[in-house]
Amino acid sequence: MSKNRRSFTPEYKDEAAKVVVELSRPVASVAREFGLNEQTLRNWVNTYRKAHAGEEPPLSISERARLRELEKEVRELPSSRSCRRVANPAGALFQ
Image (cartoon, rainbow, N blue to C red; front, top):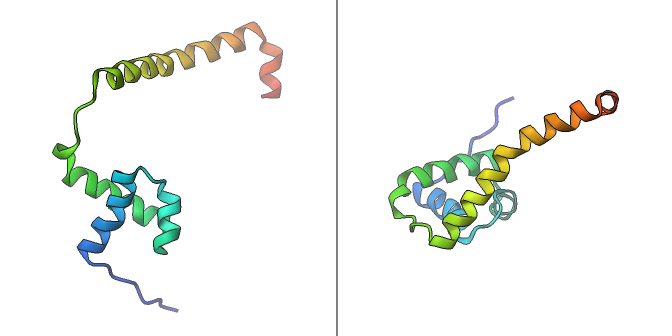
């Protein structure tokens, strides 16, 4: 029971990955559109990003500020979750 594997040209892979990266489209919808497995397209996108890492424009000042805010929120998430469990240990049984 062997399946024929499809092969794709490097240009096709780059084009599919470019749709995800440059147009900020979700991998799942682009994969459906191109008739691909999502993980296959994810691999192509990762390869494309590594190959074109120097081409990304630098973040603007407002984007950097927003990034710092989000990183701070992420750092605070685990500590706020542990406080909730200490405050309500019986509730932990039902989570």
